Length: 448
Image (cartoon, rainbow, N blue to C red; front, side):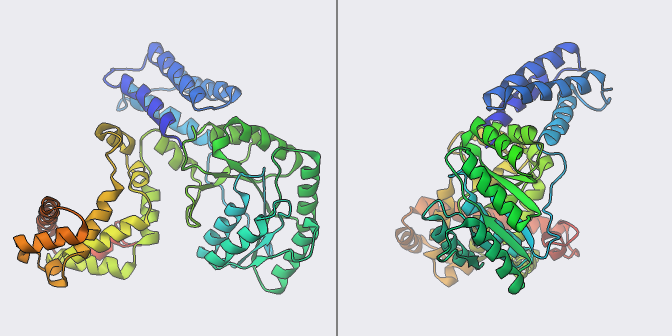
């Protein structure tokens, strides 16, 4: 979502590299480019003015550390202000109620129903026992969509049945949650194509009936400044506590996220990063600011690894790596783990200078099909060939190529890369002999 904004701002820092010290000329040049970058990203003009003025105050009054270059100093200042603009500290949910009630509000099409299911799944993975209430009776398919999603994620959904009043549905859903011992209630409210008094009266009545600890405004990142206008309307009518930003995996320019926080004064608490139920993450302003500036987001990458890599498999891999017994079967398992973590392009974005790496190698630098071809080649081998690739002669390679829809040249390339990996592991083994490698690769270990 912030790719174009990040590219423009990082370009400002590139121009400052090589300069010996920070001058008024550097500051003015950086301000002009940053201002243009934010405006092109569809950030609201008042927000841009306020943001650049804060940077100016800090940059002019700051004592530049001797060990920092002008580019590093401006980067530090912009990072701190971006983090503040995105909400400052990581905002968590208030889950103190019995049950804790969360109401999702927003316009039709913003992704409320999907977000309700995604949030329920996320809370379930954290040990909560949620119940989702289908109180959106304005859109005919909303109830069935939520029921289907609830079945998919293993979370119960309270259906309206023959009830036609969404306020009554929400109230009965709360009663059901108390009777069944559910500790969290998520209410999916109705939306409209635009803000009107009927919509606001309904959501006010629902929030009055269930008294939610959290009222989350769901904003579609693709709508740009329209999301800001609707957020301001809901904030004026309801006690919003946070924002859920959806469809951030699209080609939105990112200005909505920056503008919505500044306009409502409420933090972004969650972001939807894909279409699957698991594509839903807590929002971290500091991490997002670092990603915009090309500094990477290693913590999110670590969390993805911890969530997808099986601990026993990791221990077995560490043991095999330590003894030099890494096989093509192990390589296949690692490729499968990578696929679970999401698209390669999104993983590269989490690395420092990941965007620059993609730009340097061109638009085709991240080839997701390469993983599929590699897996197909390994699947086309016999168990003996996977464990002992040295037995792959010319005729065997032809058979594997035919079975995987690849060529003998690609088989040879895979085997060459595999041998290089083994040599690298043997070299690393000599340097870490005597260490418990499992402590370095597993969650909770000293290297995690």
